[in-house]
Length: 185
Ligand SMILES: [Zn+2]
Image (tube, rainbow, N blue to C red):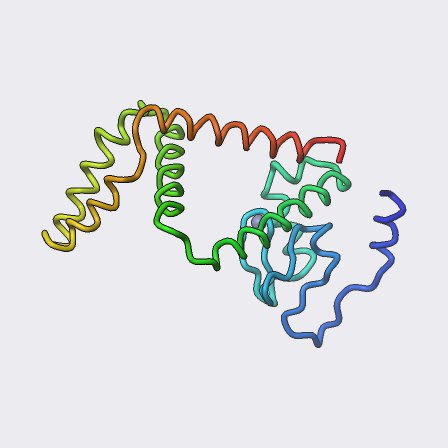
């Protein structure tokens, strides 16, 4: 790994005349890569314009991301690569049209995560969030259209049990991610 990194530092930087062209070495060093012609931070998805794609600016951005900045350069480049793979994979997933079942599952996961993050009882999905969404639909969309939206939201699994299972799944996934980030690589 050391030899590999040394080789990187010996290579020349990008020339100034190029358009938005992300130096391929920026992924390992700063976690910024070309994603469909845009200079994207693979950790937080921030888009960098031409001016921001400078080592000193990227360095500053990196320092602000404490979770990544504390890692050694070796581990960091592994983490960046992992984020990059995930980002490009999730992009191709997102460009595909989702089925209603998939949308409903995503909504259910996001809601369970919201409840857990605020340390609220899991029953609030059914007791507070659903009725609140019904109100919103009724007020903003009028009765006829609201009916369809309310039907859609009513099939979303938001029960206490579902929320518990969702949170367990999210926690497992998070644990795996952390183990991978900090693992031997
Ligand atoms: Zn970032």
